[in-house]
Length: 147
Image 1 (cartoon, rainbow, N blue to C red):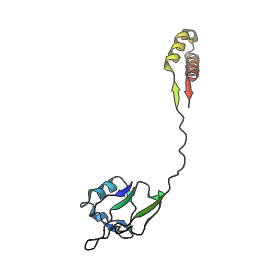
Image 2: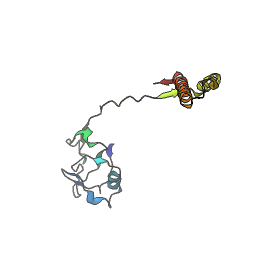
Image 3: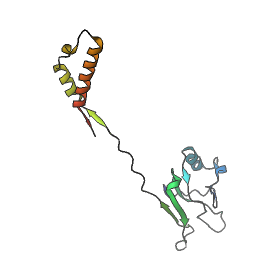
Image 4: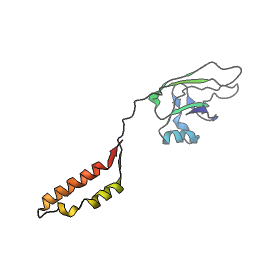
């Protein structure tokens, strides 16, 4: 997130970034700290005669390693703001494909009704369970698709 936050009380130590001692004075600094966000502009970028230099334009990120470089440019015209240029790595590793399954339970139920499960049961409990389990898994596989 970047922009002119227009917070002249935002404290920045040139070359080091935010002055964390200003937590109580500036709610934005507290929000950044609470949410593990980083502000990458490390120099004052607004210099007006008779006022303290301030950091108004911020570059905020949750992954500072993706910010390759943040630098200031020459002022444009008579502006008291110094433009900020950031190079940010936008391409990242492609996330792994997540397989999802979709089961048509209606069709599965229809097939279970027609399966006549009573014929699968015998006096041997273990054998009956294995046969029933195998039949249920077979019907489930038939009506489940992976994407």
